[in-house]
Structure formats: structure tokens, C-alpha cells
Length: 232
Image (cartoon, rainbow, N blue to C red):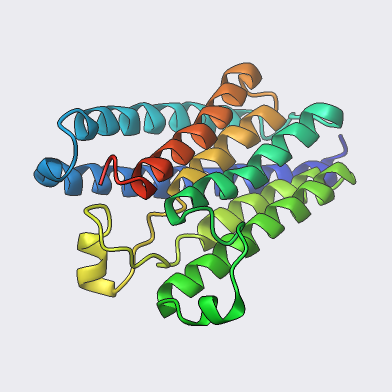
């Protein structure tokens, strides 16, 4: 890969560090908020969830370190592997939307949409736009602009931290009380972006592919547990 083509990879590697730091800080904050409220959940949930967060942070730090080390020589994956990863990255937003009963990926009348809480309307717009952006970045990646697509992926991840969720639950209580909305909903997608980039840059690709798929499945199950009121 030519030097000028490698520059976007180095830029993306720098952004990966920022994304990892943001995801880790928000995860630690979430754990600290949930522990005093563990009685609001089944007895097993908060200890298991906090342990899972710890594992996510460690895995994200590991892959981010690998992305940084590979920034000067990485040759991004292409073909079927690249396409599969980008499909999963786009679907990660569908999985995240499970916490809101898969909206906006379900049919809703315009009248019903306008009757929603304004923050929830904003959240659904962000979810749909993020899905479309990830799909577009996948097309860009497959067209040969891999470095630009990876940079765009991490920029998208950081933009998703805008507070966008006012669902009154123990995850969001602290945020809603102070700024009116929570930035937590898309934190799983930050982790997904790191794991996906790890696969694309050949950083422990099998392990990170597993982590990407597990992140999608895990957040979908979490959303299902909420929508069925099994968890909260």
C-alpha cells in the first residue's frame, strides 16, 4: 500500500484510541451507576453485566492496541470477509434498536411517529441514520477507500455519543437528571466498531469477528430482555 494510502489508516488508528477511551469511561460509569440499583433487576443480572463490561473493556483495549501497532503496515481485508464485517456493523444498529422494540426498522405511521416523545423521535432518527451511514461506509470500503471508510466508522461512533435516549431506566437515571438524555444507547456500537476494524485490519481477526458477532447478539438480547420486562 502506498504511503499516501496508508495515511487514512493511521488517522483511523488514532480515532480508535479515542473511541476505546470513550467506551471504557462510559462503561465504568454505567457499572458504578448500576451497582447501587441492583435490586431493580434480577439478582444475577448486575454482577453478570458488570463482569461482561469488564471483559468488553479489556477486549477493546487489546484490539485497539493491535490497531495502533498495525497502523503503518496493515492491508485491509477485502472481498467476502470485508463485506461480511460491514454487514454486521450495519446490523449492529438493528440489534441495538431491540431496546426500542426494533424501531425504526418496524412500520410506524407518520401520525404515530409524531406522537412520540421528542427525544425518542430524535433517537429513532439517529438509529436509522447510523444504519444508513454504516451501510454507505461499507460500500465506500468495498470500492477501495478502506482508510476513509474506517475513519468514517470511528467518526460515526463518536457522533453517536450525543445524548439521545430519555428512556427512564436505571441505566439512564443519572444522565436524565443532569442533561435530560443519556448517551449510553450506542455504546455497544462503539465496541462493535473496534472489533470490526480489528477484523478488517487483520488484528486477531478470528477473535475479533467472534467479539463483533457476540456484541451484536448480546445487545439484541439485552434489548429483548427490556422489551419483555424480564430484566427491567
